Image 1 (spheres, rainbow, N blue to C red):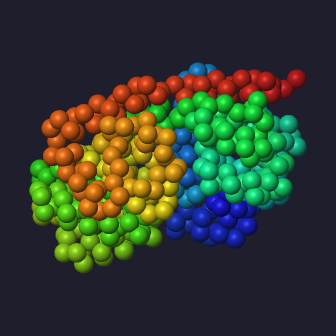
Image 2: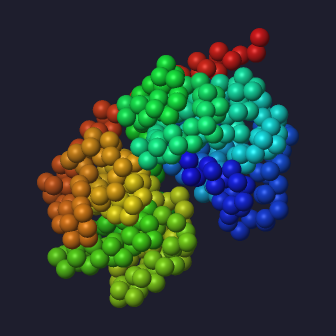
Image 3: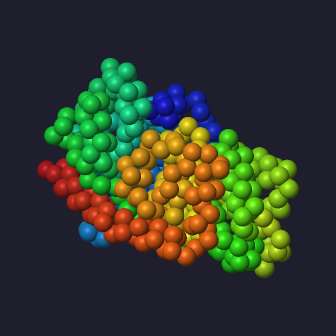
Length: 416
């Protein structure tokens, strides 16, 4: 809710502009979407940022596999999301556009151009202007892979007068879990429109190894690799403390991936102040890197999922700061055991279902204690990897279910 209310204001221009892009053209793109149609009368799938766009791409691939040639249009909101779409779809015929600002005039222009037959929103995207416009035009709306924490549900309940209209535009809600489904009913979506359908992230293919895989292996020089992924700024000192405690037992190589680009420089500085030799991804030279590094700083966006495949174990960010937890399925999909902190409200059910592959910790000391046997390899790590594989084997199929639901709504809204 907080995210889309920020966008609703139309004032947070940094959130809608790709880094380094000219200001005025991109502001105009969001405020005044092009009237040229890219997939008129098609299925429009929208994801806010990296995680949601990955889900949107998974769903789009399943829809296209099920019905080749169906007109698809993908959109994204944040600079990271837009960048990911541009890279992933560059060699495909699927068009993409930046998501319009959630203002009536911008939204109307977008709908006028594309005239979508179905709108699919990913995860928790309750944009009032978009939903109201879809309802006004009779465009069905599917909320796919829907998730809603108890904290967010409470906020929506407090703002029920504002969201009663937009919520009525939701034709179908396919929630990740039964608990998510129950919370959507609690905030006012009719129970008949809500179903628990599973998490599409289980159906994502394993990511390709990053282009810098050989460099990381050379830098690690045989040491086990710990990837600290999506670390919040205030978690970086803890990550470095965990690395110190582990290094007191046995050599370890740290790949540090801050969640926000604004934290890249601070992470570099803190690691160097701790006496560590840092190699930044953005400064990685061609050819074999020099030996002797302690930390590889992943200061680029969109490379983390593949980087987990290089790890012997992962420390998940957003769980040692009050963030609720970030995507725990990315490292598990890569076959990497994960240690999480106490803040897991957004991923609790996934963590519970991944027992044997995900391990809890309360602080730096207990995190190091949990990571040490995983980094050492042998039976503990092999058992954790097997548990992760079993989780994905048992949990797949959500993409096919979501695609079937989307196509049913699409066909039901065919022009007379």
